[in-house]
Length: 332
Ligand SMILES: NC(=O)c1ccc[n+]([C@@H]2O[C@H](COP(=O)([O-])OP(=O)(O)OC[C@H]3O[C@@H](n4cnc5c(N)ncnc54)[C@H](O)[C@@H]3O)[C@@H](O)[C@H]2O)c1
Ligand SMILES: O=C(O)C[C@H](O)C(=O)O
Image (cartoon, rainbow, N blue to C red; front, side, top):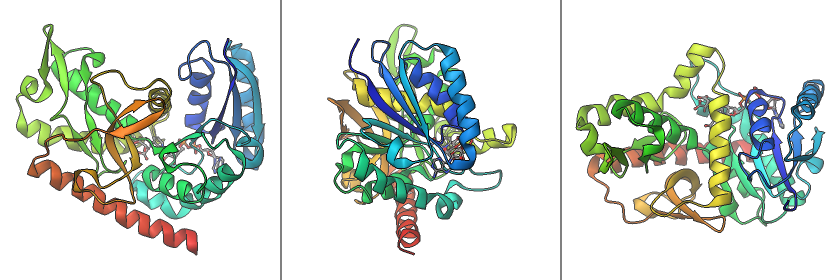
């Protein structure tokens, strides 16, 4: 067996944490032959609950789990970690937008950025799940200046998975036969789920999703809005925000970083914008990326029509506003 990897999960006593600790412990992210030492962080009042989670991890008898450290101290939680899932923060309730969480959550990511700076390995890969995820990731990176900013990313993989699942249902094909669906922009209702560059295997042939569906009105209308509003639909139904699917997406995201993307495939994640596709720099924007040796590169040169550029710009504008609000909150 390989050397163990120290992996931190924040908000480990919460809903997403409950699914995520099991998935990471079962080898779904770093592989069945890589042992993990789980560093589980939550706040002091949740330590009894977290203790119960630890009992259950033990009772799962997971072969990959070498040790579990449960704590309310970021100094302990982030010590020498190589991978971090930053989940711990408040979820939205029915009727709220994710950016309504900014004032409550962004300071958590300021404090945790500073703690990562002090205690984590400089090579740590940090995935921000807590909402508003793109802007929280931006702030977290800002307060961890000695960790390369490319090591921070925000989760839009759940949106990608949702879009992929919708296309597979529409075409009546397995979800694995749909590839290269893109999520552009913010993990919010301004995101742009884009299938212009996606392909699918239909009757044994690889075809463009656009040509296979042949329904411009659906792809520019209902498809986009249903992905944009899926999180709210789950909250309306469950009275709680998505958890199992969010944990699965977080695992997919981190596994893509660890394993890389395969030839001809790309995935979407919120990363530092370098101004590609005429979008503003200095925000965490979800782009299609390929990944090799744990480093992502934005897929370049995709043809973008006027409809797409308008959608992409709208989400960029929202991210610039969120960034300015977040900086103001942190400097308060
Ligand atoms: N990016 C995405 O696709 C996506 C998907 C689903 C949920 N989310 C977000 O993930 C976050 C967590 O959702 P949940 O359903 O697990 O919420 P939850 O309330 O069930 O759990 C959150 C946990 O975080 C803990 N916590 C709060 N502040 C903390 C801190 N400073 N340090 C460590 N832990 C802290 C809480 O005590 C709680 O145990 C929310 O912000 C939610 O909106 C994002
Ligand atoms: O919608 C939410 O608030 C939770 C999460 O971001 C989701 O997309 O399900």
